Length: 449
Image (cartoon, rainbow, N blue to C red; front, side, top):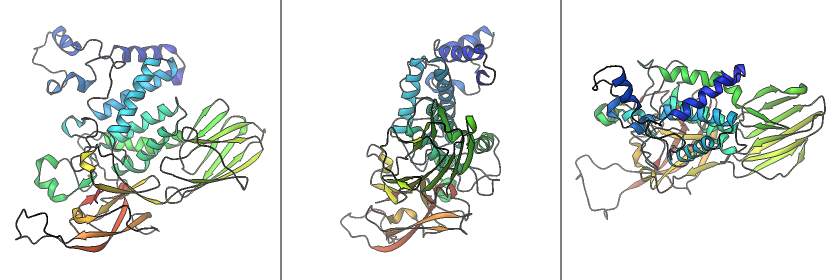
């Protein structure tokens, strides 16, 4: 409301709400008593089953060190905090945004951008707890993280916010919708098995096919509004600097008749082309994000090879002519990734990534069980674009090994010195966002090494 009307009373009210939160941890109990209701009544059914930290009501948010509770609610709150901090200059509130951001991104985020590790309360758990086969990773949480990232890049000219936004747009959020646009995931695991989902109550929340709809259908509409508003996530303007955050083909018009046209075939190609029409010879800087996954890049300005330093994730091109072309070539090599060894669930495992796209192995393409495949950083990888597969995707093939499965009559436990037979196997991997669009079966992002 403040952005639309310019009326400060709306900003003041938002600031007040944020500052009041957690000032009185017993507020909910007092409200029930004031209403004359039974002390056994919950304001929200089941509310007493969770501690006050779950509702971010145990202490003022400016004092809170790490995010607690319902993941979607946390990042929605963070989005509002960042909004208000930007317009009010509240340094303590901004410091809280920075703390929350750093803890989520550096200690509680999956490689796909998913957040919220547990089905119990759809919540955060603790640092480096990132289980793959019970991951909740609600689609709404990835959408909310995109909102938070957008507000942070409005405050700080740092590429890390665009990196996370990109991770969500191409992985964590996008996986919430089938390619037909009619089926949806509420939960986005990094490992799934139909047998486990059906047979283990602790994994029953993990679907291996997208649903038509949900009783609580927040995710489909939330993802739809993110996709419909993606144009608002491409650029920000700060004085005489325009920052380009995402590589999505577009035409953008700015003040004084300035026009930027970006064309590419991203994320399959790393060749990014900008054409700038600057009829008034306006002098400005165009900051272009260099993604953290791009170890190297080549740059040409008006056809001339140019070298520029990377500052906080951006290169800055000076523009002062009527017409300028910029060609950026990003490093699109296939990368074999590992997690911090603090993440016990991913210890001695690897994942495959190319550009911003995280890849997954599916039973549709590979012999089950997928747990028998072994991949190392030295294994040869091959990339090709298949225009007929899954509406057109980049496919990665890995020259891996596969253990031969034990006979079903073999002992359940044997001497580890007994050799295990392995065989060469080509592992086919597709983008994580596109999994579960074909036959029902196993899926795995993290592979044994």
